[in-house]
Amino acid sequence: MTTEDSRSKLVVLGISGGIAAYRSCELARLLVKAGFRVQVIMTDYASRFVGPLTFQALTGRPVEVGHGGTLAQAGMDHIDLGQEADLVLVAPATANTLAKLACGMADNLLTTTVLASTCPVLVAPAMNTRMYANAITQENLLKLLNLERFFQVGPDDGDLACGEFGPGRMSQPEVILAHAQRLLSPQDLAGRRLLVSAGPTREAIDPVRFLSNRSSGRMGVAVAAAAWRRGADVTLVAGPGVVEPPEGLDCVRVTSAAEMAKEIDARALRQDAVIMAAAVSDFRPRRVGRSKHKKAEGAPDITFVRTADILAGLGRKKSKRLLVGFAAETGDPVPAAIDKLKRKKIDLVVANDVSQADAGFEVETNRVHLVDAKGVESLPLMKKIEVAERIVDRLVGLLPKRKSRRKRR
Image 1 (cartoon, rainbow, N blue to C red):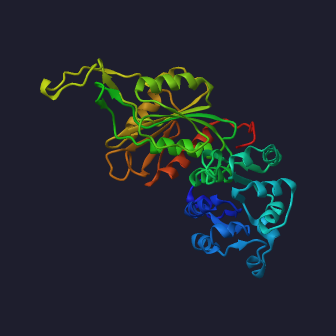
Image 2: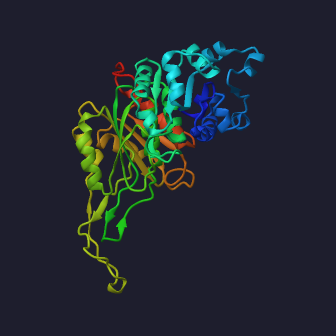
Image 3: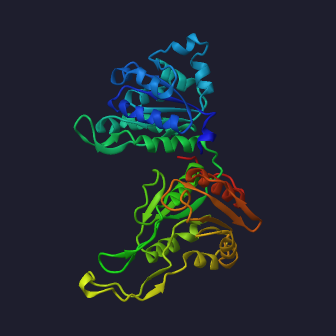
Protein backbone atom coordinates (compact mmCIF):
# COMPACT_ATOMS: atom_id res chain seq x y z
CA MET A 1 0.00 0.00 0.00
CA THR A 2 1.50 3.33 -1.09
CA THR A 3 0.93 6.70 0.56
CA GLU A 4 -1.33 7.64 -2.34
CA ASP A 5 -3.49 4.56 -1.72
CA SER A 6 -3.84 5.50 1.97
CA ARG A 7 -5.10 9.05 1.58
CA SER A 8 -8.80 8.16 1.52
CA LYS A 9 -8.57 5.75 4.47
CA LEU A 10 -9.72 6.71 7.97
CA VAL A 11 -8.07 4.92 10.89
CA VAL A 12 -9.68 5.34 14.30
CA LEU A 13 -6.82 4.95 16.78
CA GLY A 14 -8.24 3.91 20.14
CA ILE A 15 -5.94 4.34 23.14
CA SER A 16 -6.81 2.68 26.40
CA GLY A 17 -5.31 3.33 29.83
CA GLY A 18 -1.90 1.68 30.09
CA ILE A 19 1.70 2.81 30.31
CA ALA A 20 2.17 1.75 26.67
CA ALA A 21 -0.01 4.71 25.66
CA TYR A 22 3.17 6.75 25.23
CA ARG A 23 4.24 4.42 22.39
CA SER A 24 1.03 5.24 20.55
CA CYS A 25 2.43 8.72 19.90
CA GLU A 26 4.94 7.20 17.49
CA LEU A 27 2.22 4.95 16.05
CA ALA A 28 0.02 7.98 15.35
CA ARG A 29 2.96 9.72 13.66
CA LEU A 30 3.68 6.69 11.47
CA LEU A 31 0.03 6.35 10.45
CA VAL A 32 -0.10 9.99 9.39
CA LYS A 33 3.23 9.67 7.58
CA ALA A 34 1.84 6.64 5.71
CA GLY A 35 -0.97 8.88 4.44
CA PHE A 36 -3.89 7.79 6.63
CA ARG A 37 -6.43 10.14 8.17
CA VAL A 38 -6.22 9.41 11.88
CA GLN A 39 -8.92 10.06 14.47
CA VAL A 40 -7.76 9.41 18.04
CA ILE A 41 -10.15 8.29 20.77
CA MET A 42 -8.75 8.02 24.29
CA THR A 43 -10.28 6.50 27.36
CA ASP A 44 -10.30 8.67 30.49
CA TYR A 45 -7.45 6.65 31.99
CA ALA A 46 -5.39 6.89 28.79
CA SER A 47 -5.50 10.68 28.99
CA ARG A 48 -3.76 10.46 32.37
CA PHE A 49 -0.71 8.86 30.71
CA VAL A 50 -0.48 11.10 27.61
CA GLY A 51 -2.22 14.42 27.07
CA PRO A 52 -4.77 14.67 24.25
CA LEU A 53 -3.00 17.75 22.86
CA THR A 54 -0.03 15.54 21.95
CA PHE A 55 -2.16 13.43 19.65
CA GLN A 56 -3.98 16.46 18.28
CA ALA A 57 -0.62 17.92 17.28
CA LEU A 58 0.46 14.63 15.66
CA THR A 59 -2.76 14.01 13.72
CA GLY A 60 -4.05 17.52 13.09
CA ARG A 61 -7.51 16.50 14.34
CA PRO A 62 -9.38 17.09 17.65
CA VAL A 63 -9.02 14.18 20.06
CA GLU A 64 -11.99 12.55 21.75
CA VAL A 65 -11.62 11.56 25.42
CA GLY A 66 -13.90 9.38 27.51
CA HIS A 67 -17.45 9.79 26.28
CA GLY A 68 -16.37 12.33 23.65
CA GLY A 69 -18.35 15.32 22.56
CA THR A 70 -16.10 17.30 20.22
CA LEU A 71 -17.22 15.45 17.11
CA ALA A 72 -20.84 15.49 18.25
CA GLN A 73 -20.72 19.28 18.31
CA ALA A 74 -19.62 19.14 14.66
CA GLY A 75 -22.61 16.95 13.77
CA MET A 76 -20.90 13.56 13.98
CA ASP A 77 -21.71 10.97 16.65
CA HIS A 78 -20.28 7.56 17.47
CA ILE A 79 -22.47 5.86 14.86
CA ASP A 80 -21.10 8.09 12.09
CA LEU A 81 -17.52 7.55 13.23
CA GLY A 82 -17.97 3.78 13.38
CA GLN A 83 -19.47 3.70 9.92
CA GLU A 84 -16.88 6.00 8.35
CA ALA A 85 -13.84 4.19 9.76
CA ASP A 86 -11.91 1.88 7.46
CA LEU A 87 -10.05 0.41 10.44
CA VAL A 88 -10.33 0.66 14.21
CA LEU A 89 -6.92 0.16 15.79
CA VAL A 90 -6.83 -0.26 19.58
CA ALA A 91 -3.27 0.25 20.77
CA PRO A 92 -2.65 -0.30 23.57
CA ALA A 93 -5.52 -2.67 24.24
CA THR A 94 -5.62 -3.26 27.99
CA ALA A 95 -7.15 -6.31 29.65
CA ASN A 96 -10.05 -4.11 30.76
CA THR A 97 -10.80 -2.80 27.25
CA LEU A 98 -10.48 -6.28 25.73
CA ALA A 99 -12.96 -7.60 28.30
CA LYS A 100 -15.42 -4.81 27.44
CA LEU A 101 -15.10 -5.47 23.69
CA ALA A 102 -15.57 -9.21 24.17
CA CYS A 103 -18.76 -8.59 26.15
CA GLY A 104 -20.14 -6.01 23.71
CA MET A 105 -20.08 -3.22 26.27
CA ALA A 106 -20.43 0.39 25.17
CA ASP A 107 -19.61 2.52 28.21
CA ASN A 108 -17.26 5.01 26.52
CA LEU A 109 -16.74 6.43 23.04
CA LEU A 110 -14.05 3.89 22.12
CA THR A 111 -16.10 0.79 22.93
CA THR A 112 -19.23 2.36 21.48
CA THR A 113 -17.42 3.13 18.21
CA VAL A 114 -16.15 -0.45 17.95
CA LEU A 115 -19.66 -1.78 18.55
CA ALA A 116 -21.12 0.57 15.93
CA SER A 117 -18.45 -0.16 13.31
CA THR A 118 -18.45 -2.79 10.57
CA CYS A 119 -14.78 -2.43 9.52
CA PRO A 120 -11.81 -4.57 10.66
CA VAL A 121 -10.68 -4.07 14.26
CA LEU A 122 -7.00 -4.61 15.11
CA VAL A 123 -6.07 -4.94 18.78
CA ALA A 124 -2.53 -4.60 20.14
CA PRO A 125 -2.60 -6.01 23.69
CA ALA A 126 -0.36 -4.47 26.36
CA MET A 127 -0.48 -5.45 30.03
CA ASN A 128 1.25 -7.28 32.86
CA THR A 129 2.39 -10.74 31.76
CA ARG A 130 0.26 -12.54 34.35
CA MET A 131 -2.79 -10.53 33.33
CA TYR A 132 -2.17 -11.48 29.71
CA ALA A 133 -1.70 -15.16 30.57
CA ASN A 134 -4.84 -15.22 32.72
CA ALA A 135 -7.43 -17.62 31.32
CA ILE A 136 -10.08 -14.91 31.35
CA THR A 137 -8.01 -12.58 29.16
CA GLN A 138 -7.16 -15.43 26.80
CA GLU A 139 -10.83 -16.39 26.59
CA ASN A 140 -11.77 -12.79 25.79
CA LEU A 141 -9.15 -12.61 23.04
CA LEU A 142 -10.26 -15.94 21.59
CA LYS A 143 -13.87 -14.76 21.58
CA LEU A 144 -12.91 -11.64 19.63
CA LEU A 145 -10.61 -13.43 17.18
CA ASN A 146 -13.32 -15.96 16.39
CA LEU A 147 -15.30 -13.07 14.97
CA GLU A 148 -14.58 -12.37 11.31
CA ARG A 149 -13.45 -8.78 11.65
CA PHE A 150 -11.18 -8.86 14.74
CA PHE A 151 -7.40 -9.29 14.46
CA GLN A 152 -4.49 -9.24 16.90
CA VAL A 153 -0.87 -8.11 16.74
CA GLY A 154 1.49 -8.94 19.61
CA PRO A 155 2.17 -8.68 22.42
CA ASP A 156 5.94 -9.09 22.51
CA ASP A 157 8.11 -10.63 25.19
CA GLY A 158 10.30 -8.23 27.15
CA ASP A 159 10.86 -6.17 30.27
CA LEU A 160 7.59 -4.69 31.49
CA ALA A 161 7.05 -1.41 33.34
CA CYS A 162 6.02 -3.37 36.43
CA GLY A 163 9.48 -4.96 36.60
CA GLU A 164 8.48 -8.39 35.34
CA PHE A 165 9.64 -10.08 32.12
CA GLY A 166 7.45 -11.94 29.67
CA PRO A 167 4.69 -11.47 27.10
CA GLY A 168 2.78 -8.22 27.54
CA ARG A 169 4.78 -5.50 25.77
CA MET A 170 2.86 -3.71 23.04
CA SER A 171 4.36 -4.49 19.63
CA GLN A 172 6.66 -1.96 18.01
CA PRO A 173 4.76 0.85 16.25
CA GLU A 174 6.35 -0.13 12.91
CA VAL A 175 5.01 -3.67 13.29
CA ILE A 176 1.52 -2.47 14.18
CA LEU A 177 1.57 -0.14 11.16
CA ALA A 178 2.49 -3.06 8.88
CA HIS A 179 -0.45 -5.11 10.17
CA ALA A 180 -2.79 -2.14 9.75
CA GLN A 181 -1.63 -1.71 6.16
CA ARG A 182 -2.18 -5.43 5.53
CA LEU A 183 -5.78 -5.17 6.73
CA LEU A 184 -6.38 -2.14 4.52
CA SER A 185 -4.72 -3.56 1.40
CA PRO A 186 -6.45 -5.62 -1.30
CA GLN A 187 -6.02 -9.29 -0.42
CA ASP A 188 -5.41 -10.39 -3.99
CA LEU A 189 -2.54 -12.68 -2.95
CA ALA A 190 -4.42 -14.40 -0.12
CA GLY A 191 -3.67 -18.11 -0.06
CA ARG A 192 -0.54 -17.74 -2.20
CA ARG A 193 2.94 -18.87 -1.19
CA LEU A 194 5.81 -16.63 -2.27
CA LEU A 195 9.54 -17.05 -1.87
CA VAL A 196 11.61 -13.85 -2.13
CA SER A 197 15.39 -13.45 -1.99
CA ALA A 198 17.07 -10.18 -1.02
CA GLY A 199 20.45 -8.61 -0.45
CA PRO A 200 24.00 -9.62 -1.26
CA THR A 201 25.95 -12.80 -0.63
CA ARG A 202 29.46 -12.97 0.79
CA GLU A 203 32.09 -15.33 -0.59
CA ALA A 204 34.92 -15.95 1.86
CA ILE A 205 38.56 -15.43 0.88
CA ASP A 206 39.91 -16.26 4.33
CA PRO A 207 38.47 -16.08 7.88
CA VAL A 208 38.60 -12.26 7.73
CA ARG A 209 38.01 -11.16 4.14
CA PHE A 210 35.22 -11.78 1.68
CA LEU A 211 33.90 -10.73 -1.74
CA SER A 212 30.49 -9.09 -1.93
CA ASN A 213 28.52 -6.29 -3.61
CA ARG A 214 26.67 -3.11 -2.69
CA SER A 215 23.16 -4.55 -2.45
CA SER A 216 21.31 -3.40 0.69
CA GLY A 217 18.35 -5.73 0.23
CA ARG A 218 15.87 -2.83 0.33
CA MET A 219 14.21 -3.77 -2.98
CA GLY A 220 13.75 -7.43 -2.10
CA VAL A 221 12.42 -6.65 1.38
CA ALA A 222 10.02 -4.09 -0.12
CA VAL A 223 8.67 -6.71 -2.55
CA ALA A 224 8.31 -9.29 0.23
CA ALA A 225 6.53 -6.77 2.47
CA ALA A 226 4.18 -5.64 -0.34
CA ALA A 227 3.22 -9.26 -1.11
CA TRP A 228 2.68 -9.99 2.60
CA ARG A 229 0.47 -6.91 3.01
CA ARG A 230 -1.66 -8.21 0.15
CA GLY A 231 -2.28 -11.54 1.86
CA ALA A 232 0.53 -13.84 0.71
CA ASP A 233 2.42 -16.27 2.91
CA VAL A 234 5.94 -15.00 2.30
CA THR A 235 9.32 -16.54 3.01
CA LEU A 236 12.27 -14.17 2.68
CA VAL A 237 15.76 -15.60 2.13
CA ALA A 238 18.03 -12.71 3.07
CA GLY A 239 21.74 -12.18 2.69
CA PRO A 240 23.93 -10.45 5.29
CA GLY A 241 23.24 -6.85 6.25
CA VAL A 242 19.63 -6.88 5.07
CA VAL A 243 17.21 -4.84 7.19
CA GLU A 244 14.71 -6.62 9.41
CA PRO A 245 11.52 -7.46 7.52
CA PRO A 246 8.04 -6.86 8.96
CA GLU A 247 6.63 -9.36 11.43
CA GLY A 248 4.69 -12.04 9.56
CA LEU A 249 7.39 -12.93 7.09
CA ASP A 250 9.35 -16.13 7.62
CA CYS A 251 12.92 -14.83 7.30
CA VAL A 252 15.82 -17.21 6.62
CA ARG A 253 19.29 -15.68 6.96
CA VAL A 254 22.14 -16.87 4.75
CA THR A 255 25.67 -15.71 3.94
CA SER A 256 27.04 -17.33 0.79
CA ALA A 257 25.60 -18.08 -2.66
CA ALA A 258 25.75 -21.79 -1.86
CA GLU A 259 23.72 -21.27 1.33
CA MET A 260 21.16 -19.17 -0.55
CA ALA A 261 20.85 -21.83 -3.29
CA LYS A 262 20.35 -24.55 -0.69
CA GLU A 263 17.61 -22.69 1.19
CA ILE A 264 15.77 -21.67 -1.99
CA ASP A 265 15.95 -25.14 -3.54
CA ALA A 266 14.56 -26.66 -0.33
CA ARG A 267 11.46 -24.43 -0.50
CA ALA A 268 10.87 -23.64 -4.18
CA LEU A 269 8.60 -26.59 -5.00
CA ARG A 270 5.97 -25.44 -2.48
CA GLN A 271 5.72 -21.89 -3.88
CA ASP A 272 3.31 -20.23 -6.28
CA ALA A 273 6.04 -17.76 -7.24
CA VAL A 274 9.74 -17.19 -6.61
CA ILE A 275 11.11 -13.64 -6.81
CA MET A 276 14.90 -13.56 -7.03
CA ALA A 277 15.71 -9.99 -6.01
CA ALA A 278 19.02 -10.92 -4.36
CA ALA A 279 22.32 -9.82 -5.88
CA VAL A 280 23.95 -13.24 -5.75
CA SER A 281 27.71 -13.39 -6.29
CA ASP A 282 28.59 -14.84 -9.69
CA PHE A 283 32.03 -16.04 -8.58
CA ARG A 284 33.73 -17.36 -5.44
CA PRO A 285 37.33 -18.25 -4.61
CA ARG A 286 38.13 -21.87 -5.46
CA ARG A 287 39.89 -22.24 -2.10
CA VAL A 288 39.28 -20.41 1.18
CA GLY A 289 42.37 -19.67 3.25
CA ARG A 290 42.44 -21.32 6.66
CA SER A 291 44.12 -18.29 8.24
CA LYS A 292 44.30 -14.57 7.52
CA HIS A 293 46.53 -13.72 4.57
CA LYS A 294 49.25 -11.40 5.88
CA LYS A 295 50.12 -8.16 4.12
CA ALA A 296 53.81 -9.09 4.22
CA GLU A 297 53.05 -12.19 2.14
CA GLY A 298 52.12 -10.02 -0.83
CA ALA A 299 48.98 -10.00 -2.96
CA PRO A 300 47.19 -13.36 -2.80
CA ASP A 301 46.84 -15.42 -5.95
CA ILE A 302 43.11 -16.21 -6.05
CA THR A 303 41.47 -18.52 -8.57
CA PHE A 304 37.74 -17.96 -9.01
CA VAL A 305 35.01 -20.42 -9.96
CA ARG A 306 31.37 -19.83 -10.88
CA THR A 307 28.68 -20.04 -8.23
CA ALA A 308 25.44 -21.88 -8.95
CA ASP A 309 22.98 -19.93 -11.12
CA ILE A 310 19.96 -20.19 -8.81
CA LEU A 311 17.47 -18.60 -11.20
CA ALA A 312 18.54 -20.72 -14.18
CA GLY A 313 18.21 -23.83 -12.02
CA LEU A 314 14.68 -22.85 -11.07
CA GLY A 315 13.87 -22.24 -14.74
CA ARG A 316 15.00 -25.75 -15.70
CA LYS A 317 12.48 -27.28 -13.28
CA LYS A 318 9.90 -24.52 -13.55
CA SER A 319 6.62 -26.47 -13.47
CA LYS A 320 3.69 -24.06 -12.83
CA ARG A 321 5.67 -21.71 -10.60
CA LEU A 322 6.03 -18.11 -11.67
CA LEU A 323 9.63 -16.91 -11.71
CA VAL A 324 10.67 -13.29 -11.37
CA GLY A 325 14.28 -12.26 -11.89
CA PHE A 326 16.21 -9.02 -11.54
CA ALA A 327 18.78 -7.64 -13.97
CA ALA A 328 21.11 -5.09 -12.38
CA GLU A 329 23.23 -3.62 -15.18
CA THR A 330 25.44 -0.60 -15.84
CA GLY A 331 23.96 1.08 -18.89
CA ASP A 332 20.75 0.15 -20.71
CA PRO A 333 19.49 -2.96 -18.88
CA VAL A 334 16.66 -3.88 -21.25
CA PRO A 335 18.64 -6.02 -23.77
CA ALA A 336 20.15 -8.06 -20.95
CA ALA A 337 16.70 -8.45 -19.37
CA ILE A 338 15.15 -9.72 -22.62
CA ASP A 339 17.99 -12.21 -22.99
CA LYS A 340 17.61 -13.38 -19.39
CA LEU A 341 13.83 -13.76 -19.82
CA LYS A 342 14.26 -16.17 -22.72
CA ARG A 343 17.43 -17.97 -21.69
CA LYS A 344 16.40 -18.71 -18.11
CA LYS A 345 12.72 -19.43 -18.85
CA ILE A 346 11.33 -16.89 -16.43
CA ASP A 347 8.10 -14.90 -16.51
CA LEU A 348 9.15 -11.39 -15.54
CA VAL A 349 12.45 -9.53 -15.29
CA VAL A 350 12.86 -6.31 -13.29
CA ALA A 351 15.75 -4.46 -14.89
CA ASN A 352 17.59 -1.36 -13.74
CA ASP A 353 20.75 0.64 -14.34
CA VAL A 354 22.66 0.56 -11.05
CA SER A 355 25.23 3.09 -12.25
CA GLN A 356 22.71 5.89 -11.62
CA ALA A 357 23.11 7.79 -8.36
CA ASP A 358 19.39 7.83 -7.56
CA ALA A 359 18.54 4.22 -8.47
CA GLY A 360 19.83 0.77 -7.67
CA PHE A 361 22.05 -0.05 -4.72
CA GLU A 362 22.12 1.68 -1.33
CA VAL A 363 19.37 4.24 -2.06
CA GLU A 364 15.65 4.46 -1.28
CA THR A 365 14.58 4.99 -4.89
CA ASN A 366 14.71 2.98 -8.09
CA ARG A 367 14.01 3.36 -11.80
CA VAL A 368 13.11 0.02 -13.36
CA HIS A 369 11.86 -1.63 -16.54
CA LEU A 370 9.38 -4.51 -16.25
CA VAL A 371 10.12 -6.99 -19.03
CA ASP A 372 7.89 -9.96 -19.87
CA ALA A 373 6.75 -11.88 -22.94
CA LYS A 374 4.37 -9.05 -23.89
CA GLY A 375 7.00 -6.31 -23.93
CA VAL A 376 8.66 -3.65 -21.79
CA GLU A 377 7.08 -1.24 -19.32
CA SER A 378 9.45 1.51 -18.19
CA LEU A 379 8.62 3.08 -14.82
CA PRO A 380 9.72 6.57 -13.71
CA LEU A 381 11.88 7.16 -10.65
CA MET A 382 9.94 5.92 -7.60
CA LYS A 383 10.49 4.98 -4.01
CA LYS A 384 11.33 1.31 -3.74
CA ILE A 385 8.16 0.62 -1.78
CA GLU A 386 6.19 2.02 -4.74
CA VAL A 387 8.21 -0.02 -7.23
CA ALA A 388 7.47 -3.09 -5.11
CA GLU A 389 3.72 -2.47 -5.39
CA ARG A 390 3.99 -2.25 -9.18
CA ILE A 391 5.94 -5.52 -9.27
CA VAL A 392 3.30 -7.19 -7.11
CA ASP A 393 0.55 -5.77 -9.35
CA ARG A 394 2.21 -7.45 -12.31
CA LEU A 395 2.64 -10.69 -10.35
CA VAL A 396 -1.06 -10.74 -9.44
CA GLY A 397 -1.91 -10.38 -13.13
CA LEU A 398 0.32 -13.31 -14.06
CA LEU A 399 -0.96 -15.71 -11.41
CA PRO A 400 -4.10 -17.74 -12.17
CA LYS A 401 -7.13 -16.61 -10.19
CA ARG A 402 -8.18 -18.60 -7.16
CA LYS A 403 -10.09 -18.12 -3.93
CA SER A 404 -8.54 -17.25 -0.60
CA ARG A 405 -7.81 -20.25 1.60
CA ARG A 406 -7.99 -18.68 5.00
CA LYS A 407 -8.62 -15.61 7.09
CA ARG A 408 -5.69 -13.15 7.00
CA ARG A 409 -3.71 -12.53 10.15
